Every structure is written in structure tokens, then in C-alpha cells.
Length: 250
Ligand SMILES: Nc1ncnc2c1ncn2[C@@H]1O[C@H](COP(=O)(O)OP(=O)(O)OP(=O)(O)O)[C@@H](O)[C@H]1O
Image (cartoon, rainbow, N blue to C red; front, top):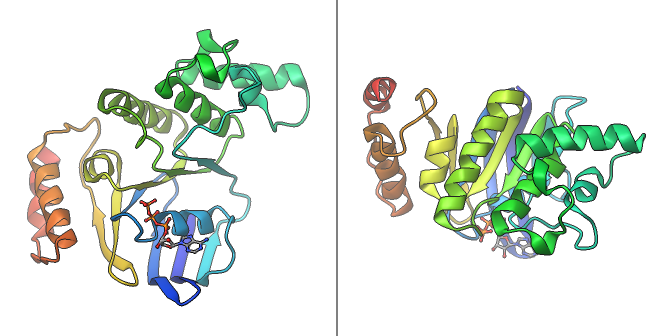
């Protein structure tokens, strides 16, 4: 296991936001943390990134794993070009860094835009640049906090495809925070649903579907209904074995 989270909890003042959360993420897996606003998804991600240490329980990350973080907004430096934003923070030889940055700009479809400044980019392009900036550090684990939620529906789908393309190529481990059920189901190997007050892990759902997936597949629709039922407080005791079987053929 690359990441192991045990008995994880987090309290802010009097408010216990998360409690008793246990999960693991395997090497190269895509795992989504799904839940309604305020359930604590970002809190878990921040702790995984090492940005927050004041949690209960334990987080174990395999030694030597490099972590990359992608936020909801691109957070580019406005006075630097796309290329300079991508190499920003890299140490060592400038030319070698730029060559490396260009490889990742190519991967995210921004090779032609390297001389542009953030104000000259569309929202989707800016987020692509943020993805390149994270990838250039060659992370083993990529943490994404609602990375596509500020984008229009079409751009969002394009970037979801891009994320899968990147994953196919570099097989990095991905933990994605989202409140979008369709996004979680379409992208993930597993969907972890956080729910309750305090939030606990209400589901660890394995999405046994090969890729490329069909966004409209019947299996995804059934899982979506199950997750919606759970979010609405109806536990339907779903027959997962049946869905997995149907899923393989979808
Ligand atoms: N630094 C903080 N101080 C106090 N309360 C906090 C802090 N960080 C988070 N919280 C609270 O913890 C809860 C969970 O926050 P978090 O941002 O993790 O939720 P989320 O599921 O990511 O929500 P969203 O989808 O809206 O981003 C919220 O009630 C929030 O107000």
C-alpha cells in the first residue's frame, strides 16, 4: 500500500469534523474522496499532503514517495509565463528544467502556449498549466482538490480525459477530492464516500470497469443511484457482485 490512513479524525475547536476514517490507496490507483460540502474531504487531502499535522490517528505514506498537489484554482504567478510557472520551484540547471517542463506542457497540450502569461489563458488552459507544474516535479502521488469544479462542463470533461491520459502514461497514484458523483465514478478505481456528523467512511466502492469507460454506462448509473441513496440517508444494501458482473460487460 502506498498510503494508509488509520483511525483518522480531525477536530476544529469543539467541532469534530471527521472520525474513525480508515482507508488505503494502492500504487497506481485512482481513488476519489466524495462527499457533500463541508464533510471534510479537503481536510483529509491536506493531511495527506502534510499541510496539516493536527489530526487524530495515523497516516503512513511509503518512504520516498513524492507528492504533487493540484488545487481548485490554478494559482499561477501572474508575472511569469506558462513555461516559467511550470519550472518555478525546480532546482538545478535552467535549461534541463525547461526541457523537462516542455515535455509536460506537451503532455497537457500547452506546448504552443509556453510564452503566454496567465491573463492570456482560458480557465481550462490555466488549469492545464497547473497540472504541468505539478507533474514536472515527477510526483509518485498526485493529490487533486476539486481540480475541475470551476470549469464549464465541456472543459471539465476534456480535463478529465487529460487526467486519464496522464495516468495511463505515468501511472501515478491519484487521490481526487470531488463532490461530483459522475466525475468520481467515471475516473476512479475506488470511490470513498465520506458522510455523517462527524464524517466517517460510508462506502469504499470498487469500480470494476475497464477503461475507456462509457459515461452513460448502466453500471455507473446503478452505482450513482446507490451513492445518491446513501447521501439521502437510504441504505439500500446493494448487491455489488451483480453490478460488478454487469459492469465488466459495459
Ligand atoms: N482551519 C479550519 N478552521 C476551522 N474549521 C475548519 C478549518 N478547516 C476546515 N474547517 C471546517 O471543517 C469542515 C470540513 O471542511 P473541508 O474544507 O475539509 O470540507 P470539504 O468536504 O472539502 O468541503 P467543500 O466541498 O465545500 O470544499 C467544515 O465545516 C469547515 O468549516
